[in-house]
Image (cartoon, helix red, strand yellow):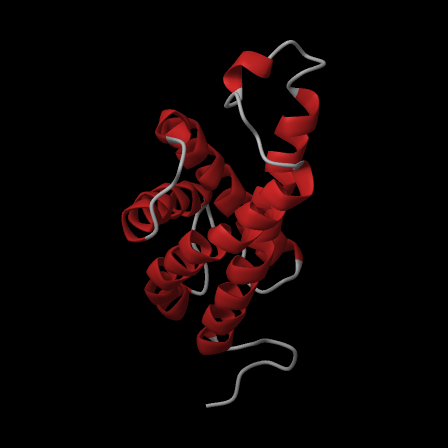
Length: 145
């Protein structure tokens, strides 16, 4: 059975979803961390940050590298849905990001335990951002949500 010209199969969609999640997800997480670290002191939100932060570049690189694990876990969790339907909704994306972050913290513990709820929320937002990139690139089908 041939598909319409220019269309990709769900197997390819799942493959590209995994690639985008493992590359864009950590990038968005590192970008969000840098924005928070830079904007918190001028906005008088410095109390939300840990007292001893490493240099910004080192911290952003660490976030990027550590973020690959939850991103890969989220992509693996979303793969069956992409293989079946060719897409997933924004709620599913957010849930996958939060659950993958929780699983990643058990595999590779996260240093700051006080920040876990906020970081899990951020993981859900990052997952939704990667979904938006996948939709904009035409990799995922537009869902009927």
